[in-house]
Length: 587
Image: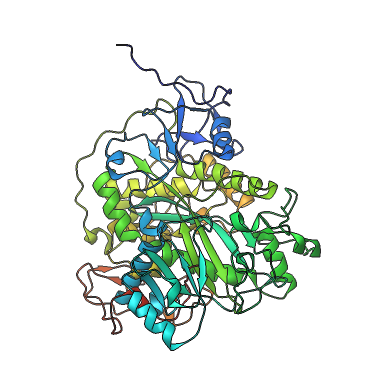
Protein backbone atom coordinates (compact mmCIF):
# COMPACT_ATOMS: atom_id res chain seq x y z
CA UNK A 1 0.00 0.00 0.00
CA UNK A 2 1.34 3.42 -0.93
CA UNK A 3 1.83 5.70 2.04
CA UNK A 4 -0.24 8.87 1.84
CA UNK A 5 1.88 12.03 1.71
CA UNK A 6 0.50 15.30 3.06
CA UNK A 7 0.36 17.77 0.18
CA UNK A 8 0.70 21.53 0.64
CA UNK A 9 -2.55 23.45 0.32
CA UNK A 10 -0.63 26.32 -1.31
CA UNK A 11 2.46 26.28 -3.50
CA UNK A 12 3.31 29.95 -2.91
CA UNK A 13 6.76 30.52 -1.39
CA UNK A 14 6.87 31.15 2.33
CA UNK A 15 8.79 33.90 4.07
CA UNK A 16 11.86 33.45 6.26
CA UNK A 17 11.48 32.12 9.79
CA UNK A 18 12.47 34.51 12.57
CA UNK A 19 12.78 33.51 16.20
CA UNK A 20 12.43 35.49 19.41
CA UNK A 21 14.54 34.61 22.47
CA UNK A 22 12.98 34.47 25.91
CA UNK A 23 13.84 37.00 28.60
CA UNK A 24 14.91 34.02 30.70
CA UNK A 25 18.02 32.28 29.44
CA UNK A 26 16.75 28.79 30.30
CA UNK A 27 13.51 29.06 28.29
CA UNK A 28 13.20 28.16 24.57
CA UNK A 29 12.71 30.59 21.69
CA UNK A 30 9.39 31.34 20.04
CA UNK A 31 8.48 32.22 16.44
CA UNK A 32 8.64 35.96 15.69
CA UNK A 33 5.91 37.54 13.54
CA UNK A 34 6.91 41.20 14.00
CA UNK A 35 10.57 41.30 13.08
CA UNK A 36 11.10 44.74 14.60
CA UNK A 37 10.71 43.32 18.13
CA UNK A 38 14.14 43.48 19.85
CA UNK A 39 15.91 40.14 19.77
CA UNK A 40 14.08 38.90 16.68
CA UNK A 41 16.59 37.19 14.38
CA UNK A 42 16.58 34.85 11.35
CA UNK A 43 16.36 31.14 12.11
CA UNK A 44 19.32 29.28 10.67
CA UNK A 45 18.55 25.70 11.69
CA UNK A 46 16.56 22.91 10.06
CA UNK A 47 12.94 22.04 10.54
CA UNK A 48 9.71 23.66 9.41
CA UNK A 49 6.55 25.33 10.65
CA UNK A 50 3.17 24.05 9.51
CA UNK A 51 -0.20 25.81 9.51
CA UNK A 52 -3.36 23.74 9.29
CA UNK A 53 -6.57 25.59 8.45
CA UNK A 54 -10.22 24.61 8.75
CA UNK A 55 -13.47 26.50 8.52
CA UNK A 56 -13.26 29.98 7.02
CA UNK A 57 -9.87 30.30 5.29
CA UNK A 58 -9.19 34.03 4.88
CA UNK A 59 -6.27 35.59 3.07
CA UNK A 60 -5.21 37.65 6.09
CA UNK A 61 -4.63 34.49 8.15
CA UNK A 62 -2.83 32.74 5.28
CA UNK A 63 -0.59 35.70 4.52
CA UNK A 64 0.25 36.41 8.17
CA UNK A 65 1.50 32.87 8.71
CA UNK A 66 3.08 32.50 5.26
CA UNK A 67 5.13 35.68 5.74
CA UNK A 68 6.52 34.18 8.95
CA UNK A 69 7.65 30.91 7.38
CA UNK A 70 4.60 28.66 7.88
CA UNK A 71 3.71 26.14 5.18
CA UNK A 72 -0.03 25.65 4.73
CA UNK A 73 -0.48 21.86 4.83
CA UNK A 74 -3.51 19.82 5.83
CA UNK A 75 -1.78 17.40 8.18
CA UNK A 76 -1.99 16.16 11.75
CA UNK A 77 1.69 17.13 12.19
CA UNK A 78 0.90 20.84 12.34
CA UNK A 79 2.45 23.53 14.48
CA UNK A 80 -0.70 25.69 14.58
CA UNK A 81 -4.27 24.70 13.71
CA UNK A 82 -6.32 27.82 12.89
CA UNK A 83 -9.97 27.17 12.25
CA UNK A 84 -13.28 26.12 13.71
CA UNK A 85 -13.78 24.86 17.24
CA UNK A 86 -12.99 21.17 17.63
CA UNK A 87 -14.64 18.32 19.51
CA UNK A 88 -13.17 17.40 22.86
CA UNK A 89 -11.57 14.15 21.66
CA UNK A 90 -9.48 16.13 19.13
CA UNK A 91 -7.54 17.83 21.94
CA UNK A 92 -6.58 14.53 23.58
CA UNK A 93 -4.35 13.67 20.60
CA UNK A 94 -2.35 16.91 20.55
CA UNK A 95 1.38 17.03 21.11
CA UNK A 96 2.94 19.38 23.66
CA UNK A 97 4.26 21.69 20.89
CA UNK A 98 0.99 21.99 18.94
CA UNK A 99 -1.40 24.92 19.21
CA UNK A 100 -5.12 25.12 18.40
CA UNK A 101 -6.96 28.43 17.95
CA UNK A 102 -9.82 27.49 20.29
CA UNK A 103 -10.04 26.21 23.83
CA UNK A 104 -12.22 23.20 24.53
CA UNK A 105 -15.38 24.62 26.03
CA UNK A 106 -15.11 27.88 24.07
CA UNK A 107 -18.86 27.88 23.39
CA UNK A 108 -19.51 28.49 27.09
CA UNK A 109 -18.80 32.09 26.13
CA UNK A 110 -19.36 31.99 22.37
CA UNK A 111 -22.93 30.65 22.35
CA UNK A 112 -25.53 33.20 23.33
CA UNK A 113 -27.58 30.84 25.47
CA UNK A 114 -24.60 29.40 27.36
CA UNK A 115 -23.13 32.83 28.02
CA UNK A 116 -26.54 33.94 29.30
CA UNK A 117 -26.77 30.95 31.63
CA UNK A 118 -23.21 31.40 32.95
CA UNK A 119 -23.82 35.06 33.70
CA UNK A 120 -27.22 34.29 35.24
CA UNK A 121 -25.58 31.68 37.47
CA UNK A 122 -23.02 34.19 38.72
CA UNK A 123 -25.74 36.80 39.13
CA UNK A 124 -27.60 34.42 41.45
CA UNK A 125 -24.43 33.71 43.38
CA UNK A 126 -22.95 37.18 43.75
CA UNK A 127 -26.01 39.35 43.20
CA UNK A 128 -27.31 41.27 40.22
CA UNK A 129 -25.32 44.40 41.12
CA UNK A 130 -22.08 42.49 40.65
CA UNK A 131 -23.09 40.31 37.71
CA UNK A 132 -26.28 42.05 36.55
CA UNK A 133 -25.09 42.50 33.01
CA UNK A 134 -28.32 41.81 31.14
CA UNK A 135 -31.51 43.75 30.74
CA UNK A 136 -34.18 42.84 33.30
CA UNK A 137 -35.80 40.37 30.90
CA UNK A 138 -33.65 37.75 29.13
CA UNK A 139 -35.38 34.58 28.02
CA UNK A 140 -34.17 31.30 26.59
CA UNK A 141 -36.95 29.64 24.63
CA UNK A 142 -38.63 27.18 25.13
CA UNK A 143 -37.82 27.03 28.87
CA UNK A 144 -38.78 30.67 29.52
CA UNK A 145 -41.71 30.91 27.12
CA UNK A 146 -44.34 31.41 29.86
CA UNK A 147 -42.25 34.07 31.59
CA UNK A 148 -41.77 35.92 28.28
CA UNK A 149 -45.50 35.73 27.54
CA UNK A 150 -46.29 37.19 30.95
CA UNK A 151 -43.77 40.01 30.53
CA UNK A 152 -45.08 40.90 27.07
CA UNK A 153 -48.63 41.02 28.41
CA UNK A 154 -47.68 43.48 31.16
CA UNK A 155 -46.04 46.13 29.00
CA UNK A 156 -45.87 46.94 25.33
CA UNK A 157 -42.24 46.93 24.21
CA UNK A 158 -39.90 45.81 21.46
CA UNK A 159 -37.90 42.61 21.84
CA UNK A 160 -35.12 41.13 19.79
CA UNK A 161 -35.05 37.42 19.00
CA UNK A 162 -32.14 35.47 17.52
CA UNK A 163 -30.95 31.87 17.22
CA UNK A 164 -28.58 30.79 19.99
CA UNK A 165 -25.76 29.73 17.66
CA UNK A 166 -26.01 32.11 14.72
CA UNK A 167 -23.70 34.80 13.34
CA UNK A 168 -23.65 37.64 10.81
CA UNK A 169 -27.21 38.71 11.66
CA UNK A 170 -28.76 35.47 10.42
CA UNK A 171 -32.19 34.80 11.89
CA UNK A 172 -32.49 38.02 13.92
CA UNK A 173 -36.01 39.42 14.29
CA UNK A 174 -37.58 42.41 16.03
CA UNK A 175 -40.82 41.37 17.71
CA UNK A 176 -43.51 42.97 19.88
CA UNK A 177 -45.95 40.07 20.20
CA UNK A 178 -45.75 36.60 21.70
CA UNK A 179 -47.34 35.27 18.52
CA UNK A 180 -44.00 35.77 16.75
CA UNK A 181 -42.28 33.30 19.10
CA UNK A 182 -42.33 29.58 18.39
CA UNK A 183 -42.51 28.06 21.85
CA UNK A 184 -40.91 24.81 20.67
CA UNK A 185 -37.96 26.34 18.80
CA UNK A 186 -34.70 27.08 20.58
CA UNK A 187 -33.99 30.83 20.63
CA UNK A 188 -32.93 33.74 22.80
CA UNK A 189 -35.20 36.75 23.36
CA UNK A 190 -34.34 40.01 25.10
CA UNK A 191 -35.85 43.40 25.53
CA UNK A 192 -34.64 45.86 22.94
CA UNK A 193 -32.28 48.66 23.95
CA UNK A 194 -34.45 51.63 23.02
CA UNK A 195 -32.07 54.49 23.81
CA UNK A 196 -28.79 53.77 21.96
CA UNK A 197 -25.87 56.14 21.61
CA UNK A 198 -26.39 57.78 18.23
CA UNK A 199 -23.69 59.21 15.97
CA UNK A 200 -25.10 61.43 13.24
CA UNK A 201 -28.50 59.89 13.97
CA UNK A 202 -27.34 56.30 13.38
CA UNK A 203 -26.93 53.30 15.66
CA UNK A 204 -23.51 51.71 15.97
CA UNK A 205 -21.74 48.93 17.80
CA UNK A 206 -18.09 48.30 18.63
CA UNK A 207 -16.09 45.21 17.66
CA UNK A 208 -13.31 44.57 20.15
CA UNK A 209 -10.63 41.88 20.06
CA UNK A 210 -9.84 39.87 23.20
CA UNK A 211 -7.13 37.19 23.39
CA UNK A 212 -6.99 34.38 25.95
CA UNK A 213 -3.61 32.69 26.21
CA UNK A 214 -4.22 30.39 29.18
CA UNK A 215 -6.97 29.35 31.56
CA UNK A 216 -4.88 28.38 34.62
CA UNK A 217 -3.78 30.99 35.35
CA UNK A 218 -6.53 32.78 33.45
CA UNK A 219 -4.74 35.29 31.20
CA UNK A 220 -6.52 37.53 28.73
CA UNK A 221 -5.77 40.76 26.91
CA UNK A 222 -7.67 43.42 24.99
CA UNK A 223 -6.52 45.14 21.81
CA UNK A 224 -6.64 48.97 21.82
CA UNK A 225 -7.92 49.23 18.25
CA UNK A 226 -11.12 47.86 16.78
CA UNK A 227 -14.03 48.68 14.51
CA UNK A 228 -17.14 50.81 14.93
CA UNK A 229 -19.91 49.52 12.67
CA UNK A 230 -22.89 51.67 11.70
CA UNK A 231 -26.46 51.00 10.67
CA UNK A 232 -27.03 52.57 7.27
CA UNK A 233 -30.48 54.03 8.05
CA UNK A 234 -31.31 56.86 10.45
CA UNK A 235 -32.64 55.54 13.75
CA UNK A 236 -36.30 56.16 14.58
CA UNK A 237 -37.44 54.90 17.93
CA UNK A 238 -40.38 52.49 17.90
CA UNK A 239 -40.23 51.68 14.21
CA UNK A 240 -39.22 48.20 13.09
CA UNK A 241 -39.64 48.61 9.36
CA UNK A 242 -35.98 48.15 8.38
CA UNK A 243 -33.21 45.89 9.71
CA UNK A 244 -30.70 48.43 8.39
CA UNK A 245 -32.02 50.91 10.95
CA UNK A 246 -31.79 48.64 13.99
CA UNK A 247 -28.96 46.17 13.22
CA UNK A 248 -25.32 47.07 12.73
CA UNK A 249 -24.13 43.75 11.26
CA UNK A 250 -21.83 44.23 8.28
CA UNK A 251 -23.43 41.35 6.36
CA UNK A 252 -26.80 43.15 6.52
CA UNK A 253 -25.78 46.75 5.91
CA UNK A 254 -23.31 46.06 3.11
CA UNK A 255 -26.33 45.37 0.89
CA UNK A 256 -27.54 48.96 1.34
CA UNK A 257 -26.93 51.59 -1.33
CA UNK A 258 -25.88 53.91 1.50
CA UNK A 259 -23.00 51.68 2.62
CA UNK A 260 -19.60 53.38 2.19
CA UNK A 261 -16.39 51.43 2.76
CA UNK A 262 -13.60 53.10 4.80
CA UNK A 263 -10.15 53.54 3.29
CA UNK A 264 -6.77 52.45 4.62
CA UNK A 265 -5.45 55.96 5.29
CA UNK A 266 -7.83 56.67 8.20
CA UNK A 267 -6.49 57.15 11.75
CA UNK A 268 -5.62 53.97 13.70
CA UNK A 269 -3.81 53.30 16.98
CA UNK A 270 -4.24 56.88 18.21
CA UNK A 271 -7.03 56.47 20.78
CA UNK A 272 -4.76 57.98 23.45
CA UNK A 273 -4.13 61.08 21.32
CA UNK A 274 -6.66 61.17 18.48
CA UNK A 275 -6.40 63.59 15.55
CA UNK A 276 -9.00 66.35 15.01
CA UNK A 277 -12.39 65.03 13.95
CA UNK A 278 -13.23 65.25 10.26
CA UNK A 279 -16.93 65.58 9.42
CA UNK A 280 -16.31 63.71 6.17
CA UNK A 281 -16.15 60.59 8.34
CA UNK A 282 -19.93 60.76 8.84
CA UNK A 283 -20.30 59.37 5.31
CA UNK A 284 -18.52 56.13 6.22
CA UNK A 285 -20.16 52.93 7.41
CA UNK A 286 -17.18 51.86 9.53
CA UNK A 287 -14.79 53.69 11.82
CA UNK A 288 -11.75 52.71 13.80
CA UNK A 289 -11.76 53.19 17.58
CA UNK A 290 -9.31 56.04 17.03
CA UNK A 291 -11.94 57.84 14.94
CA UNK A 292 -14.53 57.23 17.68
CA UNK A 293 -12.12 58.72 20.25
CA UNK A 294 -11.70 61.73 17.97
CA UNK A 295 -15.48 62.17 17.69
CA UNK A 296 -15.99 61.84 21.45
CA UNK A 297 -13.26 64.37 22.09
CA UNK A 298 -14.94 66.84 19.73
CA UNK A 299 -18.22 66.27 21.61
CA UNK A 300 -16.56 66.86 25.00
CA UNK A 301 -16.83 63.21 26.06
CA UNK A 302 -13.99 61.37 27.80
CA UNK A 303 -13.10 58.36 25.67
CA UNK A 304 -10.79 57.05 28.40
CA UNK A 305 -13.70 56.92 30.87
CA UNK A 306 -15.86 55.05 28.37
CA UNK A 307 -12.97 52.67 27.64
CA UNK A 308 -12.59 51.99 31.37
CA UNK A 309 -16.25 51.01 31.61
CA UNK A 310 -15.93 48.79 28.55
CA UNK A 311 -12.91 46.92 29.91
CA UNK A 312 -14.79 46.29 33.17
CA UNK A 313 -17.69 44.76 31.22
CA UNK A 314 -15.32 42.64 29.09
CA UNK A 315 -13.37 41.41 32.13
CA UNK A 316 -16.47 40.26 33.98
CA UNK A 317 -17.92 38.62 30.88
CA UNK A 318 -14.79 36.58 30.13
CA UNK A 319 -14.39 35.56 33.77
CA UNK A 320 -17.90 34.10 33.61
CA UNK A 321 -16.34 31.29 31.57
CA UNK A 322 -13.51 30.58 34.01
CA UNK A 323 -15.08 27.48 35.56
CA UNK A 324 -16.31 25.73 32.39
CA UNK A 325 -13.14 26.55 30.43
CA UNK A 326 -10.88 25.17 33.17
CA UNK A 327 -12.92 22.01 33.50
CA UNK A 328 -12.98 21.33 29.76
CA UNK A 329 -9.30 22.17 29.18
CA UNK A 330 -7.90 20.10 32.03
CA UNK A 331 -10.05 17.10 31.14
CA UNK A 332 -9.25 17.10 27.42
CA UNK A 333 -6.07 19.05 26.62
CA UNK A 334 -3.38 17.91 29.02
CA UNK A 335 -0.49 17.95 26.54
CA UNK A 336 -1.32 20.42 23.79
CA UNK A 337 -1.82 24.15 23.84
CA UNK A 338 -4.74 26.38 22.96
CA UNK A 339 -5.39 30.08 22.56
CA UNK A 340 -8.46 32.09 21.71
CA UNK A 341 -9.24 35.24 19.75
CA UNK A 342 -12.70 36.47 20.69
CA UNK A 343 -14.60 39.16 18.88
CA UNK A 344 -16.53 41.01 21.60
CA UNK A 345 -19.36 43.25 20.44
CA UNK A 346 -20.34 46.20 22.64
CA UNK A 347 -23.11 48.77 22.26
CA UNK A 348 -23.25 52.10 24.08
CA UNK A 349 -26.54 53.57 25.25
CA UNK A 350 -27.42 57.25 25.36
CA UNK A 351 -25.79 57.52 28.80
CA UNK A 352 -22.57 55.98 27.39
CA UNK A 353 -23.03 52.79 29.41
CA UNK A 354 -21.60 49.73 27.63
CA UNK A 355 -23.84 46.73 26.97
CA UNK A 356 -22.57 43.37 25.80
CA UNK A 357 -24.01 42.29 22.47
CA UNK A 358 -22.27 38.93 22.19
CA UNK A 359 -18.95 37.13 22.21
CA UNK A 360 -17.86 35.55 18.93
CA UNK A 361 -15.57 32.51 18.98
CA UNK A 362 -14.50 33.01 15.37
CA UNK A 363 -14.47 36.74 14.61
CA UNK A 364 -14.23 37.56 10.94
CA UNK A 365 -10.68 37.97 9.65
CA UNK A 366 -11.85 38.87 6.16
CA UNK A 367 -10.49 42.10 4.69
CA UNK A 368 -13.91 43.48 3.76
CA UNK A 369 -12.45 47.00 3.57
CA UNK A 370 -8.96 48.55 3.51
CA UNK A 371 -9.48 49.69 7.12
CA UNK A 372 -10.41 46.14 8.16
CA UNK A 373 -7.21 44.83 6.60
CA UNK A 374 -4.96 47.30 8.42
CA UNK A 375 -6.51 46.54 11.82
CA UNK A 376 -6.91 42.77 11.43
CA UNK A 377 -3.39 42.22 10.10
CA UNK A 378 -2.04 44.02 13.15
CA UNK A 379 -4.31 42.05 15.50
CA UNK A 380 -3.17 38.72 14.04
CA UNK A 381 0.56 39.39 13.93
CA UNK A 382 0.54 40.80 17.49
CA UNK A 383 -1.59 37.86 18.65
CA UNK A 384 0.87 35.32 17.27
CA UNK A 385 3.79 37.02 19.00
CA UNK A 386 1.78 37.14 22.22
CA UNK A 387 0.96 33.41 22.15
CA UNK A 388 4.58 32.43 21.43
CA UNK A 389 4.52 29.36 19.16
CA UNK A 390 7.54 27.11 19.57
CA UNK A 391 10.41 27.57 17.11
CA UNK A 392 11.42 24.61 14.90
CA UNK A 393 13.35 21.84 16.61
CA UNK A 394 12.35 23.01 20.08
CA UNK A 395 12.99 20.08 22.45
CA UNK A 396 9.81 18.47 23.68
CA UNK A 397 9.49 19.38 27.36
CA UNK A 398 9.57 16.40 29.74
CA UNK A 399 6.34 15.34 31.36
CA UNK A 400 6.41 16.60 34.90
CA UNK A 401 4.88 14.76 37.85
CA UNK A 402 1.77 16.19 39.43
CA UNK A 403 2.68 19.12 41.62
CA UNK A 404 1.08 19.54 45.00
CA UNK A 405 0.22 23.21 45.32
CA UNK A 406 -0.72 24.73 48.64
CA UNK A 407 -2.24 28.11 49.32
CA UNK A 408 0.09 28.39 52.30
CA UNK A 409 2.86 29.31 49.82
CA UNK A 410 0.99 32.56 49.21
CA UNK A 411 0.04 33.54 52.79
CA UNK A 412 3.27 35.47 53.17
CA UNK A 413 4.46 36.22 49.65
CA UNK A 414 8.25 35.91 49.28
CA UNK A 415 9.01 35.57 45.54
CA UNK A 416 12.56 34.28 46.03
CA UNK A 417 11.26 31.39 48.12
CA UNK A 418 8.49 30.30 45.77
CA UNK A 419 8.58 26.65 44.60
CA UNK A 420 9.88 25.92 41.10
CA UNK A 421 6.45 25.32 39.57
CA UNK A 422 5.27 28.75 40.76
CA UNK A 423 8.33 30.49 39.32
CA UNK A 424 7.74 28.78 35.96
CA UNK A 425 4.19 30.18 35.87
CA UNK A 426 5.51 33.68 36.57
CA UNK A 427 8.30 33.34 33.99
CA UNK A 428 5.68 32.53 31.35
CA UNK A 429 3.60 35.53 32.42
CA UNK A 430 6.53 37.97 32.28
CA UNK A 431 7.76 36.58 28.94
CA UNK A 432 4.26 37.00 27.51
CA UNK A 433 3.83 40.58 28.71
CA UNK A 434 7.20 41.57 27.27
CA UNK A 435 6.20 40.37 23.80
CA UNK A 436 2.57 41.57 24.02
CA UNK A 437 3.13 44.61 21.83
CA UNK A 438 -0.13 46.58 21.72
CA UNK A 439 -2.15 44.04 23.72
CA UNK A 440 -3.16 45.23 27.20
CA UNK A 441 -3.45 42.71 30.02
CA UNK A 442 -6.89 42.71 31.65
CA UNK A 443 -6.46 39.70 33.93
CA UNK A 444 -4.59 38.87 36.09
CA UNK A 445 -3.88 42.25 37.62
CA UNK A 446 -2.17 43.54 40.75
CA UNK A 447 -4.35 42.81 43.80
CA UNK A 448 -7.19 42.23 41.36
CA UNK A 449 -10.63 42.68 42.91
CA UNK A 450 -11.95 40.43 40.16
CA UNK A 451 -10.49 37.46 42.04
CA UNK A 452 -13.42 37.78 44.41
CA UNK A 453 -16.01 37.16 41.71
CA UNK A 454 -14.50 33.88 40.58
CA UNK A 455 -16.30 30.77 41.82
CA UNK A 456 -13.07 28.87 42.45
CA UNK A 457 -10.00 30.56 43.98
CA UNK A 458 -7.16 29.11 41.89
CA UNK A 459 -3.60 29.03 43.13
CA UNK A 460 -2.12 30.37 39.89
CA UNK A 461 -4.55 33.30 39.67
CA UNK A 462 -3.70 34.44 43.19
CA UNK A 463 0.00 33.83 42.55
CA UNK A 464 0.02 36.07 39.46
CA UNK A 465 -2.01 38.77 41.18
CA UNK A 466 0.43 38.90 44.09
CA UNK A 467 3.44 38.92 41.77
CA UNK A 468 2.08 41.85 39.77
CA UNK A 469 1.48 43.77 42.99
CA UNK A 470 5.02 43.33 44.30
CA UNK A 471 8.27 44.95 43.14
CA UNK A 472 10.59 41.96 43.30
CA UNK A 473 13.17 41.92 40.47
CA UNK A 474 12.81 39.59 37.50
CA UNK A 475 16.00 37.80 38.47
CA UNK A 476 14.32 36.11 41.46
CA UNK A 477 12.47 33.96 38.92
CA UNK A 478 15.60 32.87 37.03
CA UNK A 479 18.58 34.09 35.02
CA UNK A 480 17.61 36.93 32.67
CA UNK A 481 19.25 38.90 29.88
CA UNK A 482 19.13 42.52 31.17
CA UNK A 483 19.96 44.09 27.79
CA UNK A 484 17.18 42.16 26.09
CA UNK A 485 14.72 43.13 28.85
CA UNK A 486 15.59 46.82 28.47
CA UNK A 487 15.26 46.71 24.67
CA UNK A 488 11.96 44.81 24.82
CA UNK A 489 10.51 47.29 27.31
CA UNK A 490 11.54 50.22 25.14
CA UNK A 491 9.74 48.60 22.21
CA UNK A 492 6.54 48.00 24.23
CA UNK A 493 6.54 51.65 25.33
CA UNK A 494 6.89 52.74 21.70
CA UNK A 495 3.78 50.86 20.53
CA UNK A 496 1.63 50.74 23.68
CA UNK A 497 0.70 54.03 25.39
CA UNK A 498 -0.47 52.12 28.49
CA UNK A 499 2.18 49.43 29.05
CA UNK A 500 1.79 47.10 32.05
CA UNK A 501 3.29 48.21 35.35
CA UNK A 502 5.72 45.31 35.25
CA UNK A 503 7.70 47.25 32.63
CA UNK A 504 9.15 49.30 35.50
CA UNK A 505 9.99 46.28 37.65
CA UNK A 506 13.69 45.97 38.61
CA UNK A 507 15.57 43.42 36.53
CA UNK A 508 18.51 42.41 38.70
CA UNK A 509 19.38 42.45 42.36
CA UNK A 510 18.28 40.51 45.38
CA UNK A 511 15.46 42.06 47.31
CA UNK A 512 14.56 41.49 50.95
CA UNK A 513 11.35 39.74 51.90
CA UNK A 514 8.65 41.04 49.56
CA UNK A 515 4.94 41.15 50.16
CA UNK A 516 2.10 42.79 48.34
CA UNK A 517 0.43 45.90 49.70
CA UNK A 518 0.16 44.44 53.18
CA UNK A 519 -1.12 41.49 55.15
CA UNK A 520 -4.26 43.29 56.19
CA UNK A 521 -6.84 42.59 53.52
CA UNK A 522 -8.60 45.65 52.28
CA UNK A 523 -12.03 45.15 50.85
CA UNK A 524 -12.65 46.96 47.54
CA UNK A 525 -15.76 49.07 47.37
CA UNK A 526 -18.12 48.00 44.65
CA UNK A 527 -20.65 50.61 43.59
CA UNK A 528 -24.03 49.59 42.16
CA UNK A 529 -23.51 51.39 38.87
CA UNK A 530 -21.15 50.16 36.14
CA UNK A 531 -19.23 53.40 35.93
CA UNK A 532 -15.64 53.90 34.95
CA UNK A 533 -13.30 51.35 36.46
CA UNK A 534 -9.60 51.22 35.81
CA UNK A 535 -8.70 47.57 35.46
CA UNK A 536 -6.27 46.40 38.11
CA UNK A 537 -6.56 49.56 40.18
CA UNK A 538 -8.69 47.99 42.91
CA UNK A 539 -11.89 49.82 41.95
CA UNK A 540 -14.68 47.78 40.44
CA UNK A 541 -18.29 48.51 39.66
CA UNK A 542 -20.71 46.33 41.58
CA UNK A 543 -21.27 45.64 45.25
CA UNK A 544 -19.13 44.41 48.11
CA UNK A 545 -19.19 40.66 48.57
CA UNK A 546 -19.46 38.78 51.80
CA UNK A 547 -15.96 37.42 52.44
CA UNK A 548 -16.86 34.22 54.28
CA UNK A 549 -14.20 32.22 56.16
CA UNK A 550 -10.66 33.08 55.15
CA UNK A 551 -8.54 30.41 53.45
CA UNK A 552 -5.97 32.62 51.73
CA UNK A 553 -4.99 36.17 52.53
CA UNK A 554 -4.46 37.86 49.19
CA UNK A 555 -3.83 41.56 49.78
CA UNK A 556 -7.11 43.18 48.96
CA UNK A 557 -9.46 40.19 49.03
CA UNK A 558 -10.54 37.19 51.06
CA UNK A 559 -11.03 34.02 49.08
CA UNK A 560 -12.19 30.64 50.25
CA UNK A 561 -12.86 27.50 48.28
CA UNK A 562 -15.25 26.40 51.02
CA UNK A 563 -17.05 29.69 51.55
CA UNK A 564 -20.79 29.42 51.15
CA UNK A 565 -21.98 31.99 48.58
CA UNK A 566 -24.21 34.80 49.67
CA UNK A 567 -27.83 34.13 48.82
CA UNK A 568 -29.06 36.02 45.79
CA UNK A 569 -32.42 37.67 45.44
CA UNK A 570 -35.44 35.42 45.44
CA UNK A 571 -37.20 34.34 42.30
CA UNK A 572 -37.23 31.53 39.77
CA UNK A 573 -33.90 30.32 38.38
CA UNK A 574 -34.87 30.98 34.80
CA UNK A 575 -32.77 33.58 33.05
CA UNK A 576 -35.73 35.86 32.41
CA UNK A 577 -36.43 36.33 36.10
CA UNK A 578 -33.05 36.47 37.79
CA UNK A 579 -31.16 39.25 36.07
CA UNK A 580 -31.54 42.70 37.50
CA UNK A 581 -30.93 45.90 35.61
CA UNK A 582 -27.35 46.16 34.47
CA UNK A 583 -25.02 46.66 31.59
CA UNK A 584 -25.15 43.58 29.36
CA UNK A 585 -27.60 42.68 26.68
CA UNK A 586 -27.67 41.09 23.24
CA UNK A 587 -28.36 42.79 19.90
